Image (cartoon, rainbow, N blue to C red; front, side, top):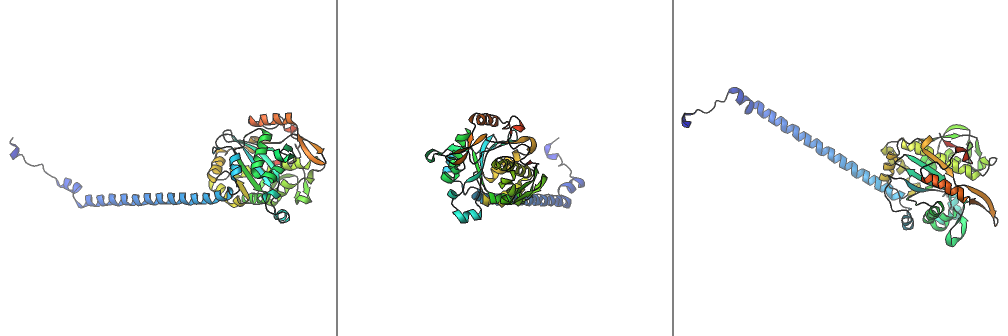
Length: 359
């Protein structure tokens, strides 16, 4: 057939109505409207996420400035150069009494304070384990130019950097991170998380520490927790009060860990913000939250172990010291470094059955 005589294809009414009628126009406009709305929603969500990110970054930066304000260049240089909190590491925890009464009497310079609580912590995020080793504050050590001194003098003589260096040499480990807590802040920490539950085997009555805590499983508020951490004379009939006080401090720390690790990230961040004025650490907020999330599932009863450096009390030149049993100390640190409990048997702990524990 001649191509000129071929008729153009017919367009049915049905075809016209689908492609070019009013309904087609309405559907097209509806699709445009939906796409426009979706774009607006997407842009709004992105704006909220960005704004939230900026707000959190600003919030975290504010907390970080408080937490890190006491980290001197000397201390930063002494700490091992690592930002990794996903592998096992050692951290030095110091409790320093900077109460108003003491500051008024001696001044608020760090040189007027001694670290009454010294705890070497091994933290293992991989296996979700924490080991806390108290070092008796009267432990005799060589402080170089300062001669033989009690280990808690390191903080007063050379600040946190000398304290870290001294504990590293004493324990034979590299310390990656540092945290310092003012005793007065402990009250705020415990109250912020709603108290802590502690098992108290014997009555703790010590007027000098404002302690009057009955035996049994107790939920302690901040003042009671601080009193338990300060009490020595409640244990006069059992032995060296410092040993039991150190054990109670580890119990309170374990109880705090248990409570904090059960919190969500926002609550953790708010808790850090609340106590940041009384805490000094080289860890920043993202690192702390990351570490807390990694440690979720930790069982305080089985995954948190603790001990005290093995020493013997001796009077030297009229001064009372704790002299280290070097062989026993090496054995303990070998166990700790391997991720084991400081003691081969719980009853090796001189405070066993008398000092408190996390419930």
